[in-house]
Length: 185
Image (cartoon, rainbow, N blue to C red; front, side, top):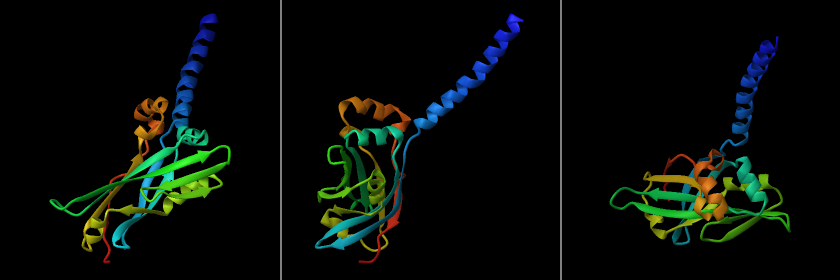
């Protein structure tokens, strides 16, 4: 009788432990990031990238942000063909200020700052970015390929989060490399 009850307990534990592990993995699932649209715009003698990102932050990223730790995304833009290939990177910083209870989005080198009342509005604002590019991008001919990729910048995180950002799936956040044709200017 004892042996049967021990076997039953072992069976129940063997069934529960993997399920508990699955729940932990769901909680630590990575976020999602995608490029919905990218358009090169000639602006004031230079160039600008109008970019729409779809983003879902993972639980640990949301927790870090809500505790005042900035989350920085790097947008990598490449245009043209070899040997005249152009390359630029821009940072987009997501930040929360607990004392004022405001979320902020800082766009690239322009330093433009937009402020939001909720994290959802902050993440939704990634759907309408305007990032400055070097003036050479304005010279790309219509139909040329513009490749855009975005991802989290683990080096911008505080030291205590850099190691988890390298190894934990919950800190993986990167879009696929997408190609968009340059429209006629």
